[in-house]
Amino acid sequence: MKKQTIIKGTLILTIGGLISRVLGFVNRIYLSNIIGAEGMGLYQLIFPIYMICYTFCCSGIFTAISRLTAEEMAKGSKSDVKKMIRIVTAIATSLGVALMVLLYLNAEFISIRIIHEPRIVAGLRIVSISIPFTAIAHCVKGYFYGVNKPTLPAISQVTEQIIRISIIYLLSSSFILKGLEYACAVAVIGMAVGEISTCLFVYLFYYGETRKILISKAAKTYRYFVKKISAIAIPLTTNRLITTILSSFETILIPGMLKSYGYSHNYAISVYGTLTGMAFPLIFFPTVVTTSASLMLLPAISEAYARKQKGVIKNTVSITIKFSIMMGIVFNFFFLAFGKDLGLMVFNEGYVGTLLISLSFLCPFLYLQTTLGSLLNGIDKHMITFRNNIIGLGLRIMFIYLLIPQLGLKGYLIGLLVSLIVVSVLDIYCLVKATSLSFNPLTFIVMPALCCVGTLALHTVFMRIYTFSYGFKVNTLIDMAFYFIVVMPLLLMTRCISFKDFKI
Image (tube, rainbow, N blue to C red; front, side, top):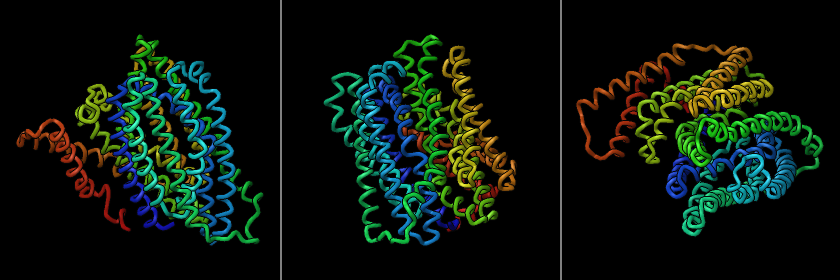
C-alpha cells in the first residue's frame, strides 16, 4: 500500500471520526444533564460485558478480514475475497446470535452476582440484541478497510451517532420520570438502534459493490479460507478476549475498591461515571487520529511484510511512532494547561477538570498504544502484543487492589500511568529489534516538549497584554485556539514535523 493511500485513508477516517466524536460529545453532554454522574456510571458499567461479547465475535475476525482482503486483492482475487466475506459473515453472525441469547438470559445473574448493580439488567438485555448486527457490520467494515476504501466506514460512524442522538432525544422525556434505571436504558436503546442501523447501512453498500462479482469455480475452497481465517482470528481473539476479560475485571473492580476507600455505593458509582463517562472521553478524543492511522496501517504493514519490504516497514513505523508521541506530548501540555476550564466548559463539572489535569500525563503513552498494537500485529508479532498487554493489565489490577483503598482514585491513576509506560517501552523495544527502527529522543520527545512550553509561555504573555470579556466559554475557546495556532508552526520550524511527512 502506498504512503499516499495510508495518509488519505487516515485523513478520511479522522474527519469521519472527528464528526462522530463531536456528535458523541453532544450525546454525552445531553446524557450527563438528564442522568447525572451516577447515571453515567451505570451506563458505563454495561460496557465491560458488551466489550467481552464484541471481542469474542468481532475482534479477531475483523483483523483477519482486513489483512486477508488486502493480501487477496493484491493478487487480483476479487472472487476469492467475496467467498471469504461470505464465510466469515456466516461465522460471525452465528457467534453473535449465540452470545445474544446467552447475555439476554443471564443478564440478571451478571448484574447482581458479578457487577453487583441490579439497575443495569434492562440495559444488558437491550444491548444483547445489537450483538449479531455489530458482528455483521464489522465483517463488512473489515472488507472496506482491506480494499483501502475507508470512506464508507467513516460515514457509517457519523450516521450511527446521528441515529443514536435522535433516539435518545425522542425517548428520554418518556423514560426519565420512571427513574435512573429507565433513563440509562434509553441510552442503551440509542446505542443498540445505532449499531443495527450501521449494519444495514454498510451491508447495503457492500452488496451494491460486490453483487456483480461472480464466485468462480477456480476460487479457493471454503476449507482453505476457514483455515486461513482461523489461523489469524483464533489466536487474536483468544489474546484479545483474555485482555478484554481482564480489562473488564479491572473496570468492574474500581467502584468496589472506591467503597473500600470510604465512599458510599452511590458516590462510588458517581465518581466512576465522572471518570469513565466524562473525563476519559475528553482524554481519548484526540485518539481519533491514531485510531484511524492504526486501522489503515494494519493492512499496509501486512502487505509490506508479505512482500519483505523492510525499508517501507521501517519508514512507516518510524513516522507513526514519531507522530503518536508528538501528538501525545502536545495534548499532555494542552490538558495540563486548559483541563480545568475544559471540564467546566463541556460538562459544567469542576471535578472533570481536576481529573483531566491528572490524566494529561497519560497522553504520550496512551496515544502511542493505539498505533503500536497495529504495527506489531502487522509484522506478525501477535504474541508479543498479547504478552505486553497482559503485563500492563496485571500492573493495573495490582494497583487497584493495593492503592485505591489507600489513596482513592489517585491510586488507580498512578497504576494506569505506570502500566502505560511499561507497555509502551516493551512495545517500542520489540519494534526496534524487529524493524531496526532508529529512535531519536531529541526529535521524538525533547523538541516537541520545548515547543509546547514555549507556546504556553507566549500564551501567558499574550493574556497579560490582551484581555477578553466575551464570557467564560468563548474566552476558553480563544485560549485553546491560541495554543494550537502557535504550537503547530513551532513544530514545523523546529523540524519536529515536515510537509514531506504529509505529502500526498
